[in-house]
Image 1 (cartoon, rainbow over the protein chains, first blue to last red):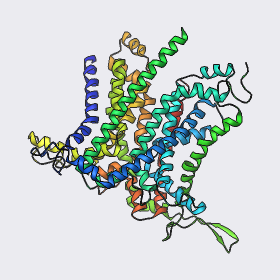
Image 2 (image 1 turned 135 degrees about the vertical axis):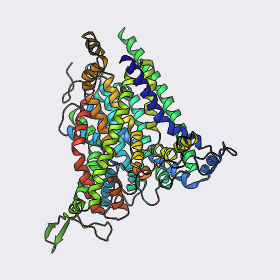
Image 3 (image 1 turned 90 degrees about the vertical axis):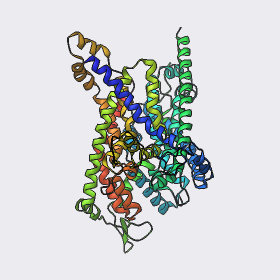
Image 4 (image 1 turned 135 degrees about the horizontal axis):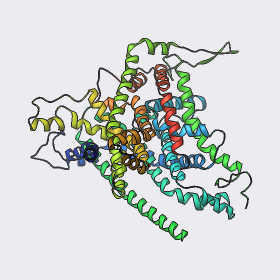
Length: 280
Length: 307
């Protein structure tokens, strides 16, 4: 039986990784295919960069990509501030009235079906516009607000679990030595959670950059984000320029993730070394 | 030295007023943009569709400028229960979500187990490989499956080239394609909570069981599986709840003769412009999901408590 398990688990692991990566690799492979049929390899004229060239000449895609970058950046910055505050409150402020509510409102968006969130946000914006005249129409503002609302929940979890890994003895010590609370936050807490803030920012950026369902509800006629363009294209079937776009996005993300993982690892090692030195 | 007045020891947040201020900022945002919208959805689900902007009747109106009257219209809910389209869509969505969650668990459990038991140096690499697809576009990853599953797609081409089949197998627009799409997109959400649970297990328990003569598979079933129940529950809920309302995956890969409820909601809203019925569909979906969401919240708050 031990032999069976030794065989079974690695097989499943290999199968699982193949399952995760084969579709992505096949998408990358066929982005170099000359044929419009995408999955029928045109051996005579491939590999080619034809679709990459067409991609950069496509104004609709380039415009949508630029809009998505703007929204995702704005979203990530706001989400990080709100999410860090919420994470700090939940991890360090102890029990207070409303804590349960705050905890519920930061976990529910993680699992809430997107169609429900999208509909709810839109109905809010419509009602607000009727009542107070803001936000006038729908566009970048409404998309950003909707994205922040679910992104900050993810940031909160990241910050909260980072803070849960440290007890508050460092903060307590600083206070005992007479540091003011604001100083404790800037000098102790913030540097401790910095890696979590960085990954929270990237996570929020990705979530916004990726979102199609909620954007579809709260976007206006002149604010079409990149996922919305891709979605309307791929509903009609495979399209070679989408493969090219996907390849570029996968490469950028993969490079980013690998770099930041290496960076984090180095930071963590340095921190551990410093802790060790401090303890000696 | 005593902590500053009004703050618990060790809490960086300062006095009570400063703490209240720090709490108020995210709280206000979430109440305004997360809680209030649901109240509005709930309200509009009792309204009636009209040809106007916005296309629903206000719930409150002034009769003779003096009496504020509240009219609740239950027709939308009546409609949900009597029109078989809605009932069958709800049942179908629950079935698809349940089957996909089971498939995710069957694939995810051995993977999480394998990662947790791998040598520490390799563990981080495996974890990164699990998380990496999650960072790339969800939409494009679902799209990738169209190229694999369609009639002249990669899988059919390869099978026909090897002579395994003569005719392409229809895989697109089937339940099978939707299961694949959901398992593929949500697999990291299953593996990560399972891994973080399995990694914490005390290996000496298994050694003790072995010393007492227990066979490995029996020790696995009687020790590892029961201990990992919280991880299983969390992973399953992280897959099941969003899968019930899934919209993109069934739109791209799924059947056209049987819609999932997320698609029905979106059609009511965009195609029929019937906001009250769309709100009723959303409210009913939320009522179905309230219990799983609350269980997930309990797990999450325990997980994020001080370790």
